Amino acid sequence: MAMWDKIKDQAKTFQQSQGTRGASGSGQGSHGPLGGGSRSGSSSGGSKAQLIGLFKSQLASAKNELKSGAYRDASMAMCALVAAADGRVEPAERQRVEELIVSNEVLQNFPADQLRQRFNQHVDRLLAHFEQGKAEALQVIAKAAKKPAEARAVVQTGMVVAGADGSFEQSEQYAIREACTALNIPPSEFGV
Image (cartoon, rainbow, N blue to C red; front, side, top):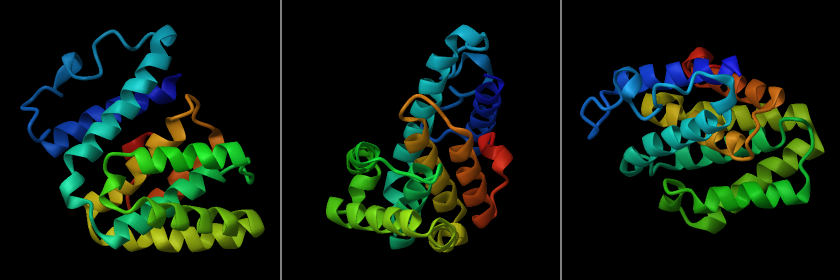
């Protein structure tokens, strides 16, 4: 539970540091989008959904800047890494992540078949030879490091996909941590 509280704080701080474009100061203090009383354990499910919502809205606000091939390729590698984090991907899970990808507002900047192709390519490599597939995915992710806004968006995309099923596995956290390292972002920014 505590991890989500930590991430919420990170997200709030992150929002403040971004100057919350267009949301003049609404992210300040505890009356922001995360609500005041969401500290108690019982509502952590809700706060998790709120957090994913927060990342989604941060991504949406940057939608017009996220049109590069580097962001597209890195976020597909990120999604594959998260999906295969535990070393296996059931067909149903693969399909679920694909649907999340093609319905994601920001990723709609790109043709759905391009996204599917890149995501599945990475998943296939990860399933065929996990360590090698992971190294290749992290190389692709690292290419987005040149632009900090894109780099953060790649991690946020991974977080949205990882958290979509309502649980955030240890292995998924680890995958996100590795991606942060590849992008030169402190994992603590995302509470992982």
